[in-house]
Image 1 (cartoon, rainbow, N blue to C red):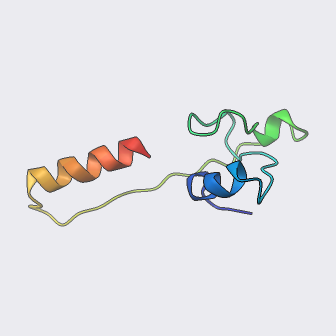
Image 2: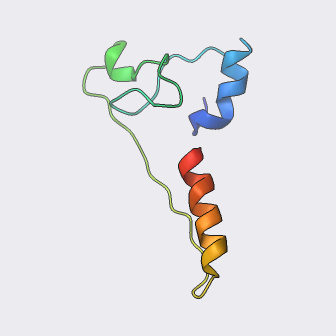
Length: 74
């Protein structure tokens, strides 16, 4: 079991682990071939989480922009 799909994708794509489903109610854009658990046997299941990226106050704008772009890309 992985708490985040993105780091597991290389293992899934290499056939080293088998993805049974994702915990969100909808398919993930980064892994559209992995069905939500709600689609494969547990109707209504939705255990999606969220996270934050924080930086100290007054972090230079170029750094904030670079971190934002990297977060959006993943």
